[in-house]
Image 1 (tube, one colour):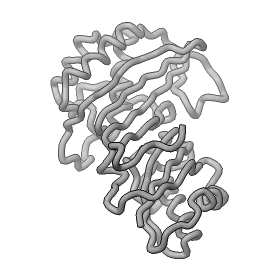
Image 2: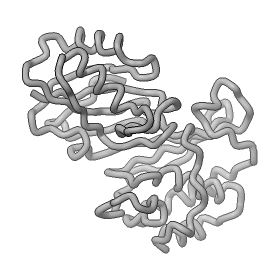
Image 3: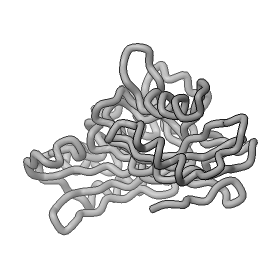
Image 4: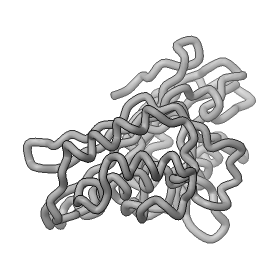
Length: 253
């Protein structure tokens, strides 16, 4: 029997989502908790990988059991009691046996936060960048992303991607009342390090180092060496994962 887990995590202490031999990961922590409760070795499959230091305000994974879980709410409660404080399970739901947390996802959304002042309480959850940024120019450049499908210019080398084709559904910057900038980007899939590379290059547009036209030329070049440096990991959050209604509907907000 297959179950989907909805969860969130603070990625500060982890090498990312994916299990690693030499460093703690979110996947490893959850698998240890599930294996303890189910009393057998249990593996989980996530909706995608997040890199070292990247957070998830919403994430989906699946796992299989030989026997049904009688009370998923109670199971989630006891799993949370085992997990570290920086990982929280929000719900567990039985799904069809063929449902897949990664391959059935049709839309993923990330958000990136930039704060223009020093703040010790948000330093692990935003890029504290103090130079003035032209948000209008950054949004003009971000709109150019809709003109492309091949994002090789923002793909990390040696990532073993079968394709660098992605379909962008949303890309926009918004400034909050406190001056914090937030970039929202949604697509059917993302390449490794893609969002951080896009943000870093858009920031160069905001400072005037690049024009929106220059940004579009970088995307069109399909050349990683043309893009700017990646934005720091701590400002990035996976914010949403969506599926066709017949596969899974989000239970929590």
